Image (cartoon, rainbow, N blue to C red; front, top):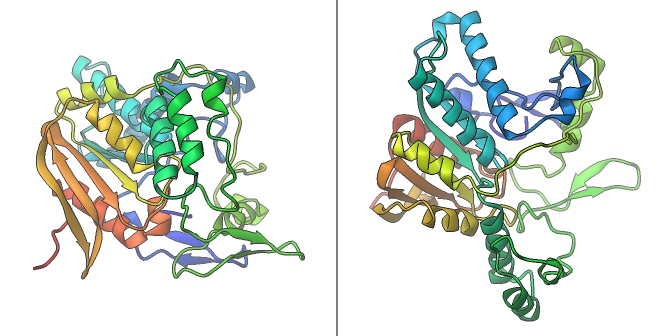
Length: 349
């Protein structure tokens, strides 16, 4: 409701408007709340919430997809893709690996026709994310030369960093959105309402508050056939496993000829494009298509680079962490290109 879905929640917290750049313009989309406990999803065994983790999430999502296809067999055999963002840098490759493994081992009657994965501003490697975030913040003027010198002195970004590194980047960045350092922020008014610090057409930094109110409306929950509950966009779960790096999994997927597209909004400081580039360097791939601009109409929508084994890295210009929120039209161009197996369009000469 804030990104790629067909509807947006209006500021009255009660009505919806159409998102003309929704991804279901170009594909059938299943929105899966995962792992159990997120959103309206739940387990009948409360102890399950203490046993959540990457592997269980992948296994549960796989079983969901198999059962969904059994329920709706008309979709069996269709080209299938997985997309996600942020920690989806774990969820998406792991689910893809689970699907490919089951397909190869013929371990289930239902094989999924997986054709590729697409992950935005992904968390792929904890150390490279930390390094990339530090470089990004310094190179964009958010931290001082002195703080940067302290970071470079104390931080190796190899898993061995101690407290000296942890405190090395102490700084005051002010009231900015770490997920879009150039975007507006949401302001709490004295009457309890929310409003954006400035207006950008098509983007509302207060939308999470509208979505929260909407999804907690009992009538909405009833209409969605959801169990009456307190919906929240933040859920704390006991987490059992989380690899430091997804490089081995990504290498395995590429070796098995699965197209992997990674993309980054260039205003994000949490999982910045620099961090993704560091991880790509660790994948051992070579450039096949040099970095070039791609177009949104007569404007540069971003930049794209192709690599061996079907890896593509796209940069979305002017977007933050949640690309379809900040630049919905550019995000739709990107996903449309991904589904066609073609790089985004070149700039007209």
